[in-house]
Length: 362
Image (cartoon, rainbow, N blue to C red):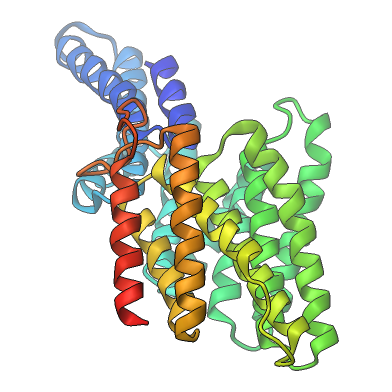
């Protein structure tokens, strides 16, 4: 069961949610069946071990379902896991599961923009992980906490976010000497968070030189993070990196032009298109959200610019599809990368639909 759960976690990090869910479901079926048998004939120690596995399986399934947007079913699994963790919290492994559940509650509160509540949960989990001397978990909490502070953006929050990320980098630098080595996913997440923080500071600055300095810093983190994400094929992180890099180039090129001439924004739109390409391997809702961001960028342009960039996007997307045979758009959940679409994928139809809308708009 533990091997099945580790396999499910590995597929989850690769955004292969169908496989992740399949392995986790197998773990749940096995452990639930064993619980029925050992409840009658098993020892107390055997029952406790099975309860641990059931709690871990429910928690893992909850994370998978949450990430593909099945919130209601995810909540059921999270609740089942939390009840078992609380009931058996005297056991060190179960107590760590309880802390991890609280950490994830903080993350979910962040996702629905309840920033103060998110920090309350995260700071409690952080304190408990420090007592356990679990630096890998402290690292993950610090990254999420920095995001909460960044987005809440009260007085002093940006400085506090930088402090959290400074400590996160110190943990990353020390990780090669730790027994478990480097958590590459967390390292890439840390660099992505730093990249977005620099981009946000650029947006808030007034002085052009200061804005460019923040954009330079953001691109440094893009380079470091993309290298890790590409090496390990972290699909979601690759999509987010590319979208933010598109914003950076869009703003940089516009800032450098400073109204003297129309900038050539094709490099920026190339990164937006790369974001959409990675989304085709991830999940339907995110793909359309990326298209919406593209539309917002185009909506502030002149008619001639819209037509130019729409033609550029369509031609580049057709080229990408011919080169790679992008996966078809799944009707639910993530894209099915095993389903090929012949000459054109269903995502291409969606892009053409979007481009036609923009032409009508212009």
